[in-house]
Image (cartoon, rainbow, N blue to C red; front, side):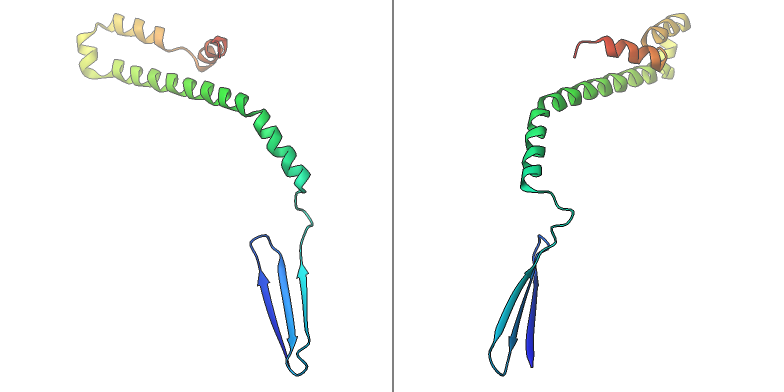
Length: 118
């Protein structure tokens, strides 16, 4: 009779141990699946690239956040100008002029935003 024990770790490495009960003879084997895995050199290269591009990524994130904040403000302003109480206090011509100034087509708005310094 043979006792077999299997152990699979988080890295996908399987350890198999077998012991023959009558003679006490034992054997051990480790099975790894390296196919399709990144080498340590590839991992190091990817980490270095990530560190190298970190500043640029942060800058682009800040630009996107600023653009989103501006668009949110613009839509908030538009909703405020369309509010009935504001419409009654403000003349229709004044409201239309302010709305036209604040809102343009998305293409014009993006063109203006792209000209802003980063």
